[in-house]
Amino acid sequence: MHRLRGSSTAWAAAALLTVLAVALVVRTVDAAALADAGRRLAASPGGALVALACFGAAFALRGWAWTRVLPALPPGQAWAGVHVALLGNRLLPLRLGEPLRVVSAVRRVPGLGPAAATASTVSLRGADTVALLAVGAGAAVALGLDARDAGGAAVAVAGLVAAAVTGGGAWWLVRLRARGHAVRPPGAAAVAATLLAWPLEAVVVLVAARAVGLDLDVAGALVVTAAAVLAQVAAVAPGGLGTYEGGAVAGYVLLGHDPATGLAAAVVTRALTTVYALVAGGVAVLAPSPSLLGRLRLPRRLPPRPAAGPAPAADAPVVLVLPAHDEAASVADVVARAPRTVLGRPVRVVVVDDGSRDGTAVRARAAGAEVVEHGRNRGLGAAVRTGLAHGVGLGAAAVAFADADGEYPPEELAAVVGPVLAGDADYVVGSRFAGRIDRMLPHRRFGNRVLTWWVRWLTRHPVTDGQSGYRALSPAAAADAEIVHDYNYAQVLTLDLLGKGYRYAEVPISYGFRTTGTSFVRLGRYLRSVVPAVHRELNA
Image 1 (cartoon, rainbow, N blue to C red):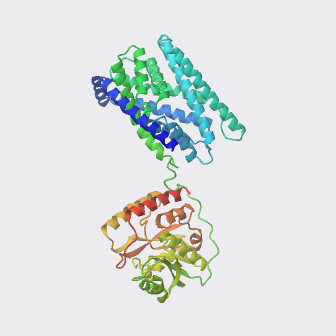
Image 2: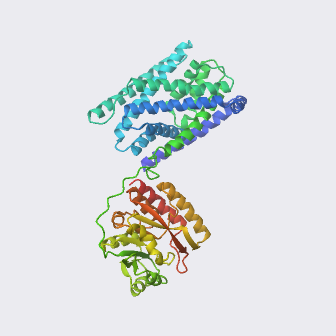
Image 3: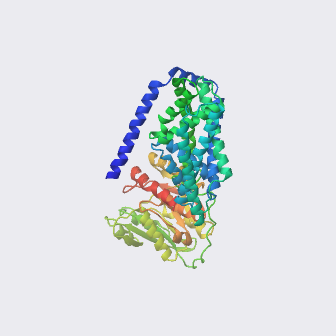
């Protein structure tokens, strides 16, 4: 409880300081200079684009320096980590973007532990600050600024603190290396990259200052950059709002510029860098794969097709599984219409009664089906899981399943299991959209199209019907299949089998909307159940 109260107080204080900073900036800034800057940049955007390119190059160098300290960190994930941190610092208070950098690396790079990611981040952030102090002090000396006017004592203290942080991080890395971690302290190349990053970042300050009409040179831009960034050490509001502008204005005043115009230049700098942070940081959350949110799609390279098991016995049946919940009105008809043989093999119809209360099991048995009963309603995914296991237990040559409500014609069983029996596929989906649809409600057609597009994107396969209820599996695929939630199976089963390398195929089928009973699918519950399950499947 005390921790929650403390957290709430910190967020409330950050929100209050943000409001106060915005109010102060709005009241103090030179609005005319700000408007002139907007017109100049809109009329000639080349300077702004160059500035943003330099800003991006600065962060690319920081990412590259990180790979020198963490050799196991891929360059793309290093780039993503520093940009996720940049985005987090812009949107969150208390510089919470820094922990996000560690989280990004640990979540996205297998085998990279939090200790190595944290130690390298601490060391490099310290080195970054030392580099900023060095280039800022060098620029101040070049401009002939008095050390006392430039806050020499404060800069010296900040330098000592930054050096201590850098040294502590490097010592931590040395200890980790001695324990077998693939890390190393920042070397000359990493230090050089951090040094070069600051002049590149200062280009944004230079362009912004000239846009508001200030005569600023490169050395002056470095002084302002150092003053503004170092002021953010005490940042509370998101993006150091208020402290950044205060530090920048102090730098401009030190250089002899008007504070109101200097504030306008600082606001333009913030606007340009915030645009970059939102765009690049947004991309970094999702790319490269795996994303910060986890893997969002199957990888481009899938494992090879699993080795085929022993050939089914000559009399091995095709098992047609009909999951059913309260389908007494239709199940007997579907069972009766199922063919007795397909492609020379006997057919065994198995109804998985998922906790029905209307006599579904009785009517299914009377029609000649085997019945496996769940004592309670567990969901379609659970029923399919049970049916697949039962089919494998029967030594099936292929296990197919279709709905017990009559929407999928059992007479087309041969078409669905044909590629499996021929050895051409391990997992076959009957596609309604490649076949004939007698009737489908408009909103369901639209929903199926959208979800199919999503499955196609998830799998990187030319799927034409991601939600079809008519499917067939080889014995190996049926035995290996995992359905990670009980509510449904369609997306997660496809992801599971494709992710394991099983060969996928589609065949056209017929479809007619049910004439009895009601569908269990409700959009809200469907999405709440399916989307998290898909994410779990992709990141299993």
